[in-house]
Length: 80
Image 1 (cartoon, rainbow, N blue to C red):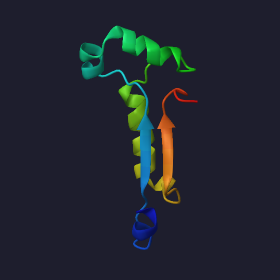
Image 2: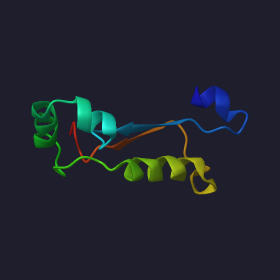
Image 3: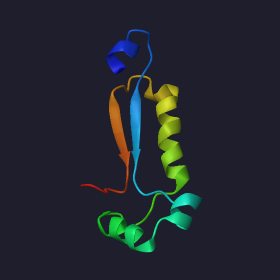
């Protein structure tokens, strides 16, 4: 997709959030599952929605105009 869109000057990137503190996660995900994920997360905490949003805002800004075909984890290291 990045190759096709790049010809038109469009960048294509992906943000890969880890466990993020949202009302849905807080309400519906069992604590044992959250704990298991956090044990495997080097930073040991959930992301705040604003932390994920800042990465998205950066990628949408002119400052990221030469970044394309990137997958950026915002996961606190989960999955490392």
